[in-house]
Image 1 (tube, rainbow, N blue to C red):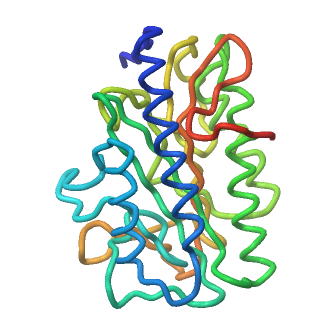
Image 2 (cartoon, rainbow, N blue to C red):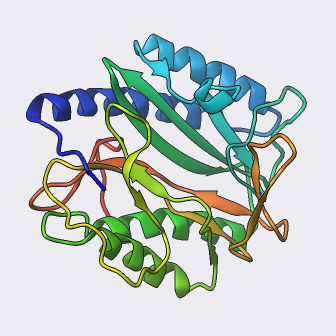
Length: 254
């Protein structure tokens, strides 16, 4: 496994790519409401990415037909936007988006509550987000990759949620998916030693019920096997000698 260490020039370009993606996500968060279609969300997201001088890196990636993955309720990831799929009060929706800016990729996901949701679903969304922050406490030089995985697992296990095992985080840079793969569940080995300059996409995908998932007939949409909701939270981060830099989240607190 060869994990790339980014140069200062590459880090600066990654920062710029991620800053532009953060802007896109912030704008998309403002339009989430009952009645909007997942198609419209994608349409707006595509426009925002291009306005930021970016290229949608999901569009046509291995044949994926949209710029934004819009996944509703039991859809874990890779939901395909549709004109007929309207968000309803009480839904949750995850938006996974990425762009390429001057040859460098950024990737981030957010899960939103549509109007008022049940307390148990709201907690799922909040815990999924917090698990990301628990994991990246170990995303620093000298730690091992799977320290991140184990910290996420330890936090989620307190709540009894299912941690998706078929899909994982990844390195990122001049390619959307680089080494290493980053599981969100406990590992027996340590994984590679982390070094400053590594850029990673850490993305817990957490289910209210079972961890098991299945693919729909469209060959893209991943859903929970038991039909219960799933939440997704992701940022692109930079490993440093101290606390990691969250490149797709300008101002953050754990």
